[in-house]
Image 1 (cartoon, rainbow, N blue to C red):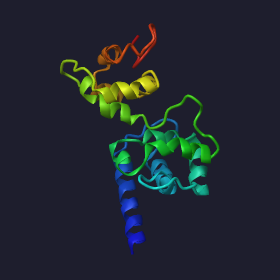
Image 2: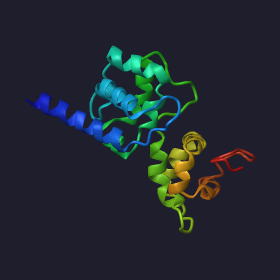
Image 3: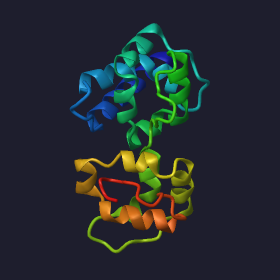
Length: 180
């Protein structure tokens, strides 16, 4: 009975994650593709459990787009149920799908840095967790996440101030969010 309830809970949560995720319309991502990725791969990504080797359908689905759609689906709902730290393990188990240097599941940068990037408000210095996360990849992940939707929710002009406040993470002349 407990297993049945866990499966029902997982499927309901997967539906919620897919429903609230903002999949990009290019590269073949769709709600159906993201749903399939999560259904097949959920046992490997669950929080508070050991990493389970993925089933063949999981790897087959992820190989279609090199995990792009699954990585793009990472949002607060995803983080409530799935362990983002298991995404690289999943990539490796399915044949090293993530290109070295690529990032998957960068939503955590935004979670910790959101107060510094709010629209229509003065710049607020970042909290330590924000800078700690951004230093891991020199803001690459956050800069890579900038798209038209990002600009509707966050102030792109504050990215430079955020970099400076965290110790000048962006190299001179580098681009972040289409800005130099």
